[in-house]
Image 1 (cartoon, rainbow, N blue to C red):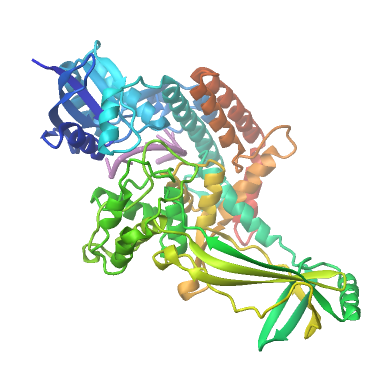
Image 2 (cartoon, rainbow, N blue to C red; image 1 turned 180 degrees about the vertical axis):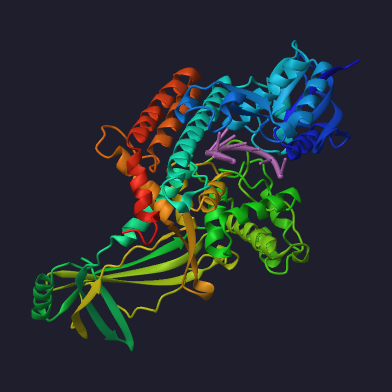
Length: 628
DNA sequence: GCAAGGTC
């Protein structure tokens, strides 16, 4: 009988895709007991080399198999002082709802010579792979373990991955294991400490869970930071110069090179020098072709930011809708950091699939008829998933309102990526008037190209400028001083918040929306509608509790050497750097866990010692109104 | 009753 190889993917959709490619479509599907998503696919495949022709069972897990938690005697909140959670014994167990999946792997491993792990090629995937391996070894201690390395589910790529397996990256799996332990200990310790301590301080906090997490707190910190900048803003008056020329029945506004200054007397003096000069001289006439670049291939973070902005859906809704579209097979996997298309993907074929669409089908046809361009490549590649793109066309009447919006965005964005940049002609005129320089710009859009399908970008011709000759002299129609005031920044919007999280490494593409939802759920922040109608924007405003927590923690570490507030992203960033050291093999998992725990333990001890800082902040913002 | 990370 042929040798048997067990293959396990990270999710059912990948198991099916890989099975399809390896078997050429000829496989048998078996349901497993206890889980309706996971299936076993059976077929034969020639792995070549030492393995040769084998019978294959391809199955999957559904994300992580196991979870980490404290031993039973530490689970009750009153069972131990919160600080002891830094050392309390922890145990990794298979999640209850994953038991049938783990059983399936152990059983299949019994009859298999080898295990091929097909989890995503990222850090979490490496760890999930180690969880799969542990189950397989429990079923068959002698099973040989290999890992397939693939970054998309294109047929040739998948088959090559099957023929050239590598080993699991133990370093990366260890790094994730360290993260899991740290997040648990630190999250639980601070959550219990602050909840138990603050619940009794003011009536408003009674019965409330006041959670701490290494991602949710910095997220809150960004919101509070902006809020305080708005609150503390003091407007300043400024003055500037503007020059106007009426020529060829057009009115040209020249802007001051210095923009504006905060000293009126100085600006007045400068204006006088201009007026004395009487004539202005054209010092630069620059005409040059310009272009507006088509967008980069779509990543999750970009989808969420653009979605908040143009589709009026919050990031969590967008992700839910996108997942639905993915499960139904309409778009590719929606959680990706990759903004470059693999050369192996047949983009034209994907463009052709959009022909039937009433709104952009004609545009797709024009692309194939000669206007197609290879997409730009960004600098990110998660080596697991391609950029988000439509996989097949779907009729709008098969989708609900939100699905329609998100699908349309993904489709238009994809077609835009495969288009040419918009082309135009820009004109820059610079003049010298007295000692001062002024300039004006004109734009003529010549070819709209991608703008025709990507309706979210705006780029329009400005008013035509009259003709200017280099060196010519003219007398301005008007020259005067204008007065203005600096304006306060706005409260944080969701796309801005996601941008900050992304830039500071808070959360992953898959979890950013969850952290934002979490701080809403905990009532650390609330949503405010700025403006009305179509131009309205949702903005985040911290609640009194949110401000109290950030101010309290900032006070806790105030004046302490090297101590960074928990409301800032720095501690999390440091943890991330240490995880990279595990990945590169320069530090062990144990070292990193100890170092990071020491770092957070120090903050924890300060917090306990100066708990009054937190309590005072809560009383200040949440105390009864009647109290004096 | 705590976290963050996978995925359904």
